[in-house]
Structures are given as structure tokens and as C-alpha cells.
Length: 94
Image (cartoon, rainbow, N blue to C red; front, side):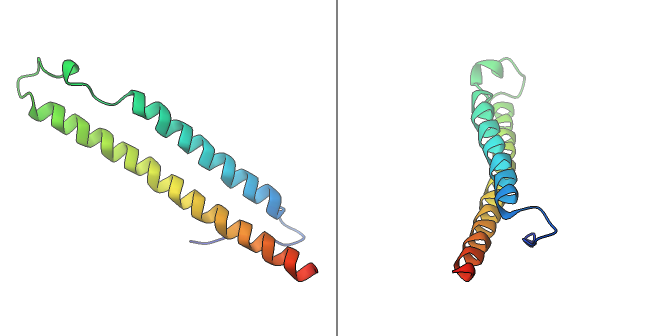
């Protein structure tokens, strides 16, 4: 993971952290909304290959959720690295 460098001519560490945190929060909210779209068997039982189609729909839903969670974890990791850099700079000032 490439982490931005905090320096005087760039975006402040606080702003970088806020941007990443906001993006992570948006992904978290998307996961919550996605949960409402979890497949229900009642929407698939009339299909010719039920329950296999329902099971496939469930797997596809889980894959979508996992994609979002991968991005969420990456943003969480990036926020931690930025936060550590901010802390390190503050410590060096003292």
C-alpha cells in the first residue's frame, strides 16, 4: 500500500486522515444498506432451478459484500498509517 507523504506543500495529515475516514464511513454505510438487499428465498422459489438459483444469488450477494469489506479494510489500514505518521511528526516536534 502506498501511503501519502505528509509535508508542508501537500495536503495536511489531518485532512488526509479525514478524507480516508470519510470514505471508510461511506463504505460502512453502503455495507449496511447492502444488508437490506440480502436475497430472500421467496423471490426465487418460482424459478425453474430453485433452490440452486437462490443459492447462487446468495453467493453473489456475499461476493459483493466482501468486495466492499476489502475496500473498507484497506481504508482502515491507510487511516492507521496516516494516523501513525501524524503521531510520529507530533512526537518529533516535542
